[in-house]
Image 1 (cartoon, each protein chain N blue to C red):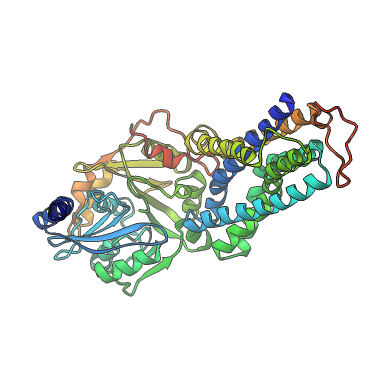
Image 2: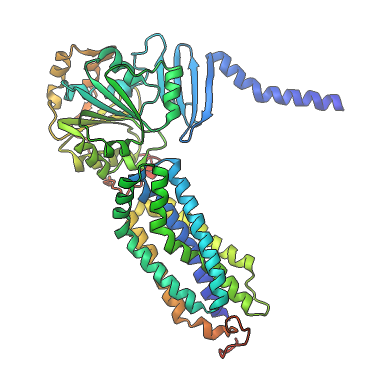
Length: 298
Length: 216
């Protein structure tokens, strides 16, 4: 009887562990790091030559990935789409990026846009450490990094940027204080004349519409890029962009059609000039249900 | 006596709900100035714990010194008026503190205490005050200390969920706070109008002799 119990226990343990082990073996996936920072549960996972930093416990939501053989190749559609910012402001000399992740965007700047000063702002000190350890992130000459809350950083900073990129959002959580009209007004005040803001979001929820409405309440012109192979969208806003959407193709040609491995022509095709948003609230510091809207599908 | 119990329950549920509603809303007030990190929640929760402690001690002491619901209700009127002022004062307070204290932990702690110390401490007086009064009745009260805390906590549960799940998506934070303030003021005035003290017939403070009120 005792033997039977023992066998049963072993069988149960196999049942529990075997599927995971099998799945791991089949996909070649390997967990390199898993722990909690003061902000997130962070996992670093490698599958083949693709290494990802995952925030939260939803393993399928890969947040930031790097191809170890081609670190400047965009694994996610949205990271390539964000470089559409250069179609609107091709002469940009300084860019502020809020949200480091695995450091893919700074890597592309380091490899292909060395003439552009990039200032990255990341709130989580552990993300910087992991980016350096597992993703080859380094701060070359011409780039700087601040460990700070994005809004607090912009408030304290007196510098102005040609482009400000907002990439501090997960699929299920947004730092709500960086979604409001007051925040976007702060962003606008930190842009140079004709500067642009680029924001990455998921298109399928009600927050996306609210964010477009909020952008429109601050900036004169708001354009949207809709992903073709993902649910990602990019909002580009400016008071006086150097180019309007009809001129984007010409601008892409002028830039040689590429930034590193990123095909700018492919991004041009994703631009939507006027997106209708229905019943979308303007988010303010006072009225800000951003994290409830992100859960509501359109 | 049913009216007295109804008054107690109204106080416990309303202020139990108001405390937690304000706690949830305070994160929206803090995050534009101090960020949205876990530090903010640390400041919010620890500040409220300090305010609760102050309120518990004060409520217990005052209930023995002045065992009259009218005294508690007068404090609650002051507290409600303070809550009504929060939408006006929080911006300059947070702005000033965030510009003068660089560390967001210290800054948010300071701002939370300036804005919430007075109203939350007074709200926290409700349970110990009512426990004190029911104890001072010197006879079997249907409302045990445990039951008082239970009713207040049920109010807190309702206040937390209603605010986090519904109110924030329906109204601006400032309007929700004004709503909470008006509700608190209304409850305080209703309790004053019910003249609970004369219905209870409490012994006088500290000397143990019976008051002139009719004992129901």
